Amino acid sequence: SSLAQATSAEAFLIHCIGPGSSQDIRLPMMLAAVARGLRSGRRTLGSGFAKQGRRNFWGPVATSSTEPEYISPNNGAPRLPSPWNKWFPYEPVPCTPRFLPYKVWCEAGETYYFDTSGESTTQPWAESPTFCQERGFAPMIYQPKHSGWKLICACKHSCAKPLADWTFIVHWADYNTAQAMGLGFGVSFMFGLISTWLVHP
Image 1 (cartoon, rainbow, N blue to C red):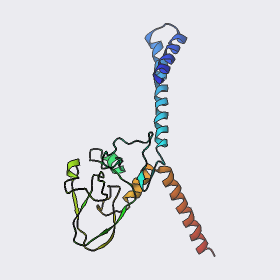
Image 2: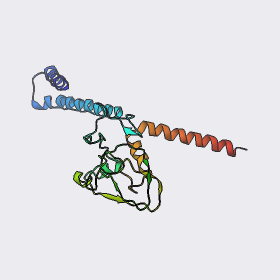
Image 3: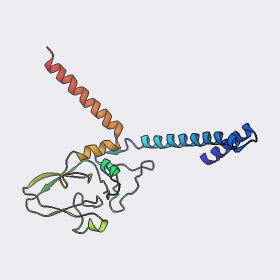
Image 4: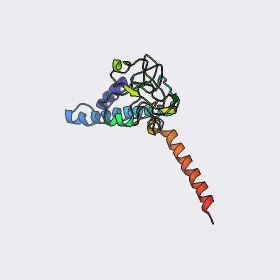
């Protein structure tokens, strides 16, 4: 184990320098502690990269190496803090059934209970009027003025809840940095290529 390796390394350093004052021993032990910190930092960084690319728009894919801190026992949705939650960690964090919004037909004047907790099995709506309150989230009532197809937030972090905005893209990119960078580069490259071809003399 890493603890046994660190202990043996410290014992080897003390043996090499021989018996002496505590000041003679302190420097090698400090260096050994720094080495242990660097090793743990590399493991943390590696696990962070391993988490990339494991989640898609239609739903987070939980594996043994990417398990979030909480998974809803009701519908299996993981709790994925948004960039806002990382800056303000004391706010309640809902579960995220998926990133891509739900396309739902809504009737004008009808009352819908939007699931703000992300744990309902009847997404994007709550299972009952008190479902969100039972999980510590404020309920949200939605009464559309016009009938039609609506894009309802699925990531549960939209600023225009219950309607979706572009927050789900930021949320997805935060957990899929490599893919987001590749997508941004590809779109920028194609836009530059086409615009250059259109305006070239």
